[in-house]
Image (cartoon, rainbow, N blue to C red; front, side, top):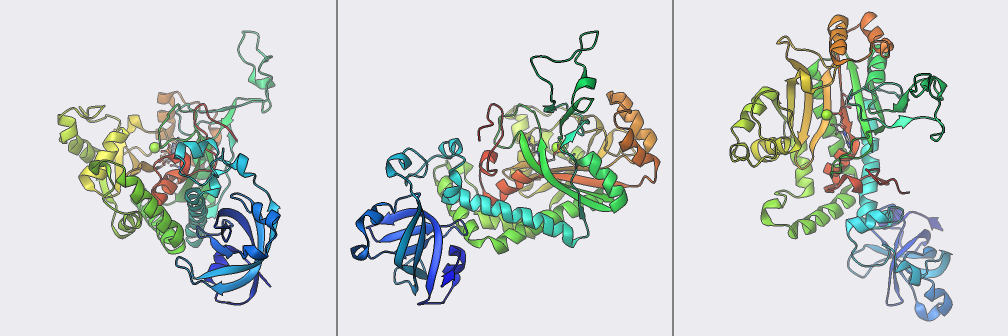
Length: 480
Ligand code: 4AD
Ligand code: MG
């Protein structure tokens, strides 16, 4: 008896052998054909039942959504659509699913909108789309580790609870063990954080970068891959309040080296899934094509999903300075015709996603790395350029996604860094440990952060970031 996963059995040629497989019923046609899925692959195992030999009460319990164990003979399939099938000798019901109740859920066999699926995020993984997306997400995560491990990076776990605001943007979720109805106060009425669990103000991390830097200046090359949290009230298809970020940090590496690694890394992980997720990608490609058909011509994607991935892998990302980008944008049609919501008037303007998408999708038509941004629209830790007004920042912009990576060469000079912090009102005492790295063996170093869900979005073609993470956290939504 071979006990196997559907994925393995579908590849097997051990015909006429006894097999056992467990999974969930996707459909049961004509009292004869069970489509069984166990999550190992997008493909179902066709299990053929001889209903005349089967107990009627048992047959009735083979319903959509039920968990069953099938035993039978693996045979070459005569029907189209699959190579092998199981001629069933026995079915055991492991967990019933009452059709009367199933019909009110997204398990019911009909088309459900992605919005509807989101409301039942605990069940949506049993659909083809979410099975494919989540398997692909898992493989991408493996590829992330694989890339860095192969290239001599060490995996570092930076803290999730921290006292610092790495991005200086103030978009943090507070962590406290205070009884909110009875908050200790100081004599002048302020919240007394000395009484709180950590004896100070703490929050969920927005980025592991600052701690990551300290480790790079010791381990040489590190990466983090963990959850990060942002209390920004952005209800868009690209923002989550809880998302996963990959943050490599490299000592003795400048901005050009940083861009090289980011580009190489993205190409590697996309290539990995092209090679290892063929069935899921084929499914997602078709899903996307069908979704596209419903859109007006102009909004349709010019390339299929796998072609899009291949295009990114095969072509150099276009490297463009912020200053060049501003010139292009100022001269662009949507700017002149005032079609942008934010008109680009002069150098120094912060780029909105409409501008980023114009550059990537309309102008360059390929991934773009923008670098050397104005200092005052970027974070405090970025290396100041000789011109005194730009910093060695880089953002990677992707078609359909916008910003997928944000990174920089770091300011390694203590005097320049502290001056910048003073100007921005960042407390040196809070970041004493960060500044220590600039005191003891400071060196040129760089790193970046890649939003993992945005990568999964790009790789799967899913339009909404809420559909590439199992349980999305967004403003007013923390169900499950
Ligand atoms: O550009 P960000 O804010 O950069 C940093 O946090 C740096 N400390 C990274 C570093 O240099 N180590 O964020 C990095 C990336 C963005 O490019 C984007 O892909 C993603 O994280 N990101 C989000 N993804 C989903 N939801 C959000 N709210 C996100 N905010 C940023
Ligand atoms: Mg950014």
